[in-house]
Length: 299
Image 1 (cartoon, rainbow, N blue to C red):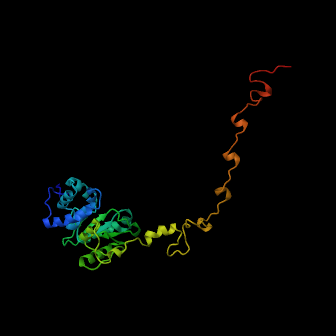
Image 2 (cartoon, rainbow, N blue to C red):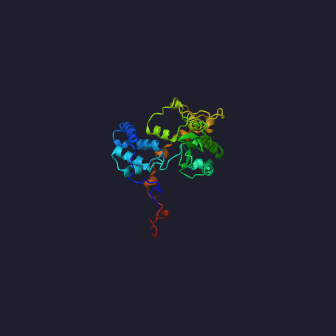
Image 3 (tube, rainbow, N blue to C red):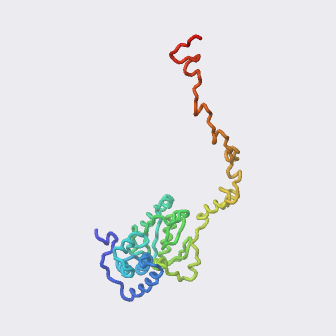
């Protein structure tokens, strides 16, 4: 098995063309300047080179190493550890299907299997037209909307095999697709540049919120003592500043359960003389005042 088959870079790699290198070097200098130590900028730089080629190539690894004074082995160790750094070219739209526990049992495994068959590609592969790549993701951090699909790291919630197929059809046809939450889609390379730490310059994109919706906030609302939609008046707990109501606990605690005043003999017991400092009674050694095995004498 070759290094290419393993997803490892074949080094030494050629450098970027001079004009590309000069442009990336200026961006890299800006990123490095944000950190007290240059090597701390490695993760943003890997996103930067991924934005250039659609994956982290051997040339990109060489560039990062030169900018940070690291070895290519050190850069490769980081680039191959984090799954967001692609080792093969991604499509314009990279589709990630969550197959972790909750999404899987709610349909994520089926969605992923059917998308692979529908697109004719396997995990971490790209369609021939370069439009779509697909990957199974270990948790998209959106369990409250399971099963979840991401496109260029934007959320598409509550998916089904049918909706996922329609999603990739719309992407390939160039139709506008809006995520369930978050900013409207841009290409994978543009997304990588934003992840590197450069601003999203599309008008209004930064105002398109990706904040959690009602399922994400349900636990918080319950903790505050609020009623959930569709359950008027029903509460699980009281607000923290209020005492629990009888109907919430459905239990009227008795005085001795919650405000018990322990009796003297329970906590501050004064042992009786015969318990700890036992003085044998006269009749115990023998009956009628006689020791065992002895006869009494007549007066």
